[in-house]
Image (tube, rainbow, N blue to C red; front, side):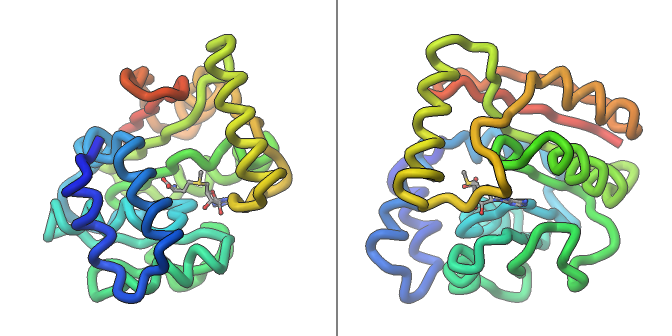
Length: 217
Ligand SMILES: C[S@@+](CC[C@H](N)C(=O)[O-])C[C@H]1O[C@@H](n2cnc3c(N)ncnc32)[C@H](O)[C@@H]1O
């Protein structure tokens, strides 16, 4: 996880960022293991962040790896408007699901899918993973972070948190579902059939029962 100073350095790259968005971004940067996640991706080439939200992972990644170009997309137009505050030659952000953005390059050296699958019904999860597998170069790396639904009260608590964000506060855009995360083995088996060899790594230190799925093509 990033410390406060590292998180503030990322937020500082958004000129004109509102106080609420800045606080939300810093909280997310200090809670989510973006530093570990970044270590599973190639340090150069084209990296796609599907469901990038405010685009902060891309800002962190391109600051750490100056040889990389970061592409981000998210169907939430308001979040992409914020992400674009930090847009430059090496990071570009687009509104829309990955399947709907014609400006994206045809293939990527790395793709990340961080905490978005549980906001989609299973058929859309499968469609998104199939699209990502088809757009990954060989060699290429895929990294997925998701909630393991089989972790008892910790999973219930994570679902409750999602319900608050999606249904109650309406802060998180959902693609027709919430708390729809599936057992990680469902994703690894699916990706295996698509030619991506996967490993599942629990993420210790996270208050939600998150797992990383890392895949290689
Ligand atoms: C919990 S946020 C995670 C954002 C970001 N990946 C991060 O690490 O902070 C979930 C994001 O998924 C996005 N989302 C919802 N449906 C999506 C879809 N079909 N494709 C891509 N992103 C989607 C939401 O707009 C939201 O920005």
